[in-house]
Length: 481
Image (tube, rainbow, N blue to C red; front, side, top):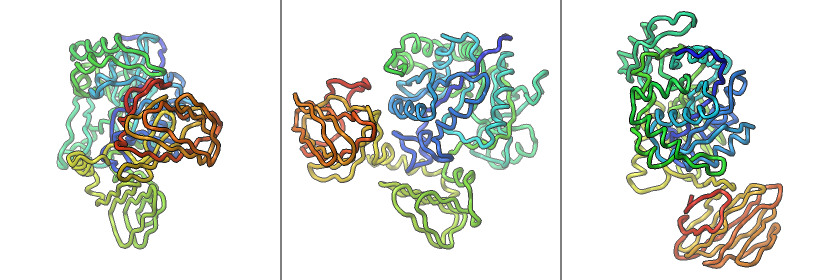
């Protein structure tokens, strides 16, 4: 079981969540891991950068869904990280299949690869302690163990699963065999766990050799192991992404690493750590780890307050003013405002489900919709018209496309636009415009070195994003993707 070679540690960043408890800021099309909630960088950027200083660390593998691929690629580029792979899940199948796919990928080039499996949306305050723990876990992994990070509990938390540690592992100080994984407890049980000193919170972060994980998966979940192996074997490259085979990956059982492997393997180990960890699972969690003022408040954005205590107030697009309130969460975005007591912050998910049931769209997308070429956002919508702001990044281009039901009028407000309209190609400068008739093939490009800002006025009988026929696209997109 032991492999003595000094193998690289490969960060495997899992970015499949939607973060519904952080609505209205976190939404399906732009979830919390893509947002800057705890630092200047986004949460996935913080996760990727955290292991960059580890001597044995290799380039990360990111596992995500199709909708987030371009944003994640751009965010990695912004921090100078070139992922070894961005693996696209065709459907969500929880963490065990996602990690299996990444393991197969890594073993192609590194037969001794060690995986550090990291959710993309966790906050860690003490990065140095975390790196020390990863190195210790890497040494355990080289000896064949599957290692979980157990967070030293600070309170009898009922929202986390727990790990009970058993005997110390010889030759690995501070490491223990796992006695058992336990589900989220009630308050009395959590208090007993805290008092015993034998339990840690299950962080959902793991370190193990890729080959050992696949060995255990094959023994414990043979159907899953076979489906994931075939999904990687039949995967297809798409630009800088790897698309897993949809049929084979969808056939895999949907289970977490805990349920599929860690709770059943005889080689599970745990390293208890005190690293200032938080899974940022609610607005109350952001209040808890935020820089509170002398009245216990955390404010973000344009906030005015009088006699406010122990509250989290966040303004994204306008001003939030509060008077004489305590223990509140108020989050404002351009199209939604959340107001909740801090002790009910976990229940935001119920509002999101209600939005879905009512057939609304505020759970899914923001007013600003990010695309690989930049973004667009709706300014005004009415009967047979819509006004949008488009930003095209330097050197980027929209697809060559046409619409069956709408015409478009573009006005350049900043930068230079290269416009294809039918057989004509022209350059437009600021304050110049062009009209695109219904059914005309057209393309918008930014040939300059500064962002291109366009005001687009759409008119027609149908203005949905799915009224699009693409003839050529540098991003290989299909439909309204």
